[in-house]
Length: 304
Image 1: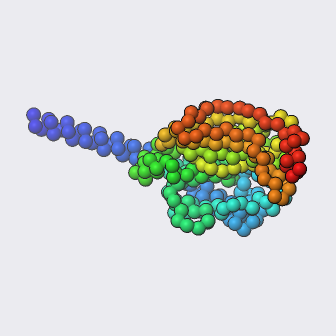
Image 2 (image 1 turned 180 degrees about the horizontal axis):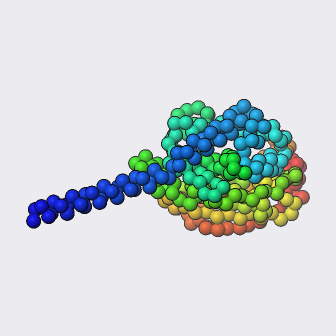
Image 3 (image 1 turned 60 degrees about the vertical axis):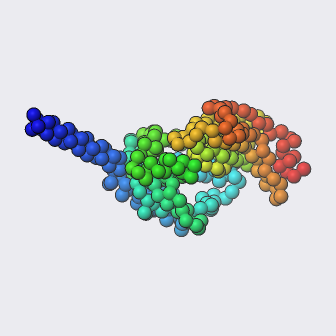
């Protein structure tokens, strides 16, 4: 009887060990080592281009649709292209020393998710956060598309889980390659009025669309982005969607705004749209509104 019990226990322990080993192998399978080496090299070349302000190198390693998008943004701010490609507020962070949580490809798209002390070169001690890099394969060559920085200051439980090896958070759809190459944007030739969206969304993801042209996505951050194509004479449309992120309470404050920026020195931006919810308030999952640029608004922009 004792021998039989011992045999059963041995089998159960063996099965558990096999199961644990299989789980570990699945977790490791999320990082394609060969792909990681290749994408790291692409990102390094793109980063070098940004640091050295080398337009030809930048164009070589940047996805074509992203080049058009960036040019649209610069034109929408009435800045000079390509000089303003390299006018960025922070230095692109190196991935050396960061831990790769996931590196996968699907079709002609790939993502690389890193965790660690992400250094933007602004001084001070960097904190542990997430850096998501996106890549596009064009005619057999991987090219850098964009980066997303996910601040974990307000998601301490997520940070704790990642450090403990629980990668549930980065297994979400938003961190995985979609397999769909973004459509080529329509080139923006000019913008009459410079407009910017501003979002404060701790613990949330906010997606916005302005005038059915300018798309924006924010995650657990406070930042602004230029509206592609700028503001239009007459009626302008704003659409937004908001959802809570894992680890949030769902009760965080939220602020979404659109500003028009004056070209006249000393004239403050004009707030033309705002959706704001205080802490513990109820946030709409979806919303839409309009704002109008009429002669009165134009006069304010011109300092009259």
